[in-house]
Image 1 (cartoon, rainbow, N blue to C red):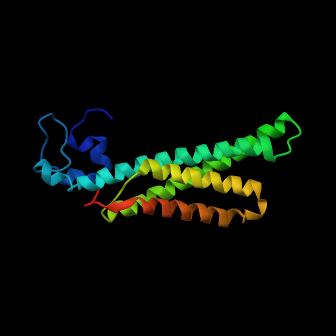
Image 2: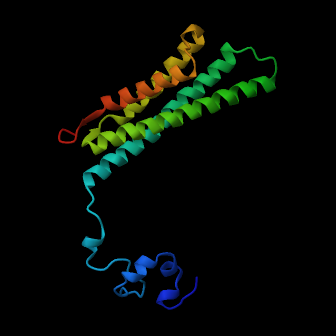
Image 3: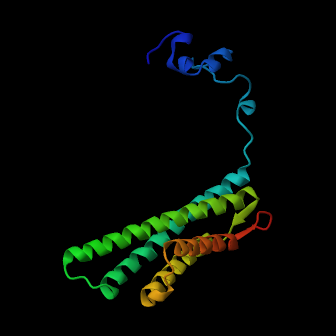
Length: 183
């Protein structure tokens, strides 16, 4: 996409409505996509909401790490104490399958945290104690997994198990929400 006159550039060809609204060039020679002072070009941003969302994102990453650690430790416990594995290939298969499942569940819990925390942030609530909340999610996962290994009758099936983990993650996240005025 070389230099060309105003109507021949790739930007103007891709976005003809921008070309029609063109009112001039900026001081550095580039095409201005909007005219007027910069304050009119950018939508107003609530700084408080962006800070709350940044906390939610960090909390989601921390929750994924805690839940993944709980799942991986459980996978190791399952492979060494609760599984009959006749050879090394069986051990690797069991460990890999359990680890993939644990990481997938942890990623899902991170998505649940993002949605729940995003709803809290849009409603003007901030998350407090996110390190503790992430640890609680990981602890709940670990206790649930070990309980299901020790007493298989407590395993309800995939859908109810996932529903319980989602419900617990939502409840733990909501318990950390406080009014932004008190935060």
